[in-house]
Image 1 (tube, rainbow, N blue to C red):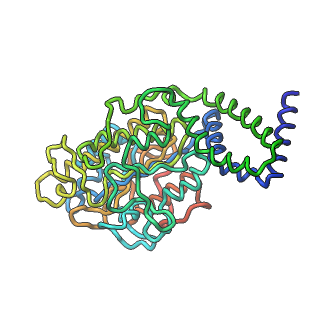
Image 2 (cartoon, rainbow, N blue to C red):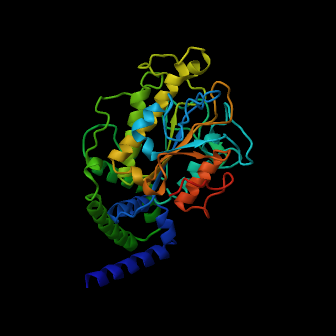
Image 3 (cartoon, rainbow, N blue to C red):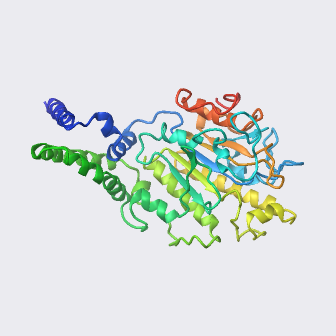
Length: 416
């Protein structure tokens, strides 16, 4: 009887929407509905496979001309700039023979047009934007673009032919997702409020198209939906309710470039929390920009990254590039702790091969995560183009019909 009443009410509700000129596909496109779909996904039984993708931009390649100080040996002995990945190397595939190329296969490595790192050279949209409209379509936030001292010199993401700036402020990132920059309170409540706030204008537009009687019925149904949502939200894990976030009381200052480590970890922590809470499936990171103006005061070399590459100080480039590998180690480790690594594909890319020579060849490109879908702990030939790595990711995700072909097709010995 209960099911019959529910079905009858649902039919009546849909009929009312139809009379108002609204359709189910329209509602599915609404922010509130997207949040509901994401919450329902949290209840669903876990299905093996890759559900999320993280793209990471590392600026200015690596010291690879002459002696390659980034690429591991076939037995996975790590050189100096990859050494920080030792504890997670079994989760990684390192690509040899990866040239930063355009859609025609020509090398385009060097400064400028940063979006080539994510497959933008010759395409209207970068790879992460294509994922936004496919893998991210049912998420409350189809994608997140999170930077660390990245703004001012181009973007790794291009949408509809235009580069898109990243959010460099970790506090603004958290506020956008959870509705507050304060590190207290119940994030479950913040998340619910955030989804409802995003839907306020949609509700206002809808009620203006309904008569008084229909508005009352809509209010009744919305009240029921909110009750359902609250029950669904109760299934969210403890990490989403009371996260340990920004416990140091960090305050963002765009003019202060001395906090790269803390800012990067806050951005990564927030992205992982958002994935745990089913708010997004697609995240892109920029760790600096192609001019490499960031500095890491805790290193022996305390000048900016660009100076480490061209300044002529022995070991400086190697030390700074190894530090950026440590950022990848942090990301992989924290995803593993959160139970998300096996269902998340990570792609690290860049804009050139050797940063000092501004070359295209031997670029430091890698994959990580992916669980049983990825043959981690190996070195694989990229067959002359980093674009083939994106084609491989497309095949892993089963999106060959939805996404363009970036290079010559998927690589063998990557997909298990």
